[in-house]
Image (cartoon, rainbow, N blue to C red):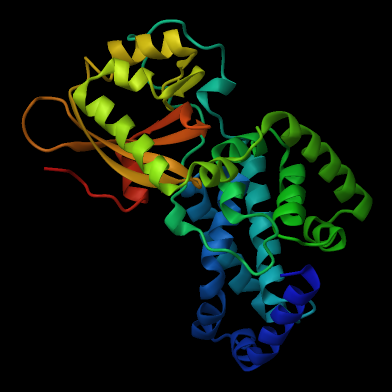
Length: 347
């Protein structure tokens, strides 16, 4: 849908909602809730793109809706409700970024390790990037890019290297289709400043986001072959088969495990880590294939003592190049699996 036709559709819907808008402006919170309810999922995805964390997105969206409710009596309908809510959510996220800074992955903190590091524990004072469940996604009517491409890990990680104003400008313009004038109004700046921020942001992303995207790669592979790759990855870990695992990896594969600071680059280093840690020291594994950040992913459950249930351990997001795995990003922590609505244990 073009920008013009989508705006017309939004304006038509706005006219149909005018009685509800009037009730909400008069202080009817139930009417306000009915109006914003259909937009919450796409607003949540926007907050995740801005902040790189589902938990931060939860908090930012909640704060944005509180701000919107408090200010709703002054909403005069000069823009669509959707545009107005995106402006409120964006300003809320910019406040969070100003107070907290960017989120990181282990690759941002230092060089890779050549051998398995068994002594260093997690870094809990780092704001880590987190995974995003695909079930939380829903396309907005003005989205230009394929939605899943805009939550891929490489894209979200690259956004974290941008100042807040550049991050916001790029997402509002390139992903959501707002005009430079609308963005300038949202960010209380000039169109010239917005265009400058866009140019700088695009240069950074061109350097940091690989091509092709995961969506393009997955379309080339096809669902059946993708399922076979993911199943083979799960089987290799569950069977403790290092050779089978290595056969799935690229020569320059990377494996990182936030909140652990150490990461591994290259087949030799990744193989040494896999043999030393998940394939021999951890215990028994079980896995559930899922999707996260628009990519193939696997939820890992671990039974470390040889008895009892398998407990939630990590969300592993797989980045493919062709039919091989080029990156494994293992987000450690049971809280990630809870966010994905996965079982608390496997028998």
